[in-house]
Image 1: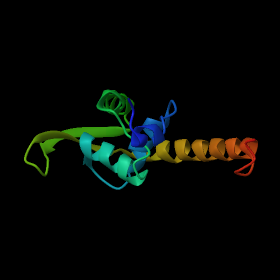
Image 2: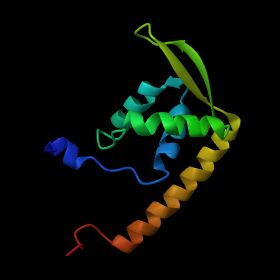
Image 3: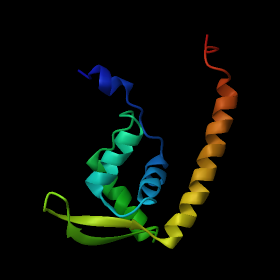
Image 4: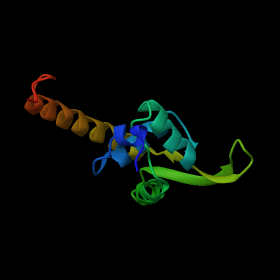
Length: 118
């Protein structure tokens, strides 16, 4: 049975994970677990990225040339792949963020002010 915390989490819409990964990597190089943790922390625990979704997304972004990866050692002395935003990834981040802001604004207009759901 899901806990209250699990019930209050928001499911990621298709395409949002790529945007969130690009946004996290804007601040610098990070390994997969660090990316997932940053998304969770910055969303104030509303978004939880499962490993089964994160690593395929990282591979997809790397294949598109939006991020690059190299092996390194994590802070707990384990071998990990570290991801970095590429120049193309920075361009894509600007485009994707603009599209999502426009979409969020349009949805907010349709929903109207809070409290008018009834």
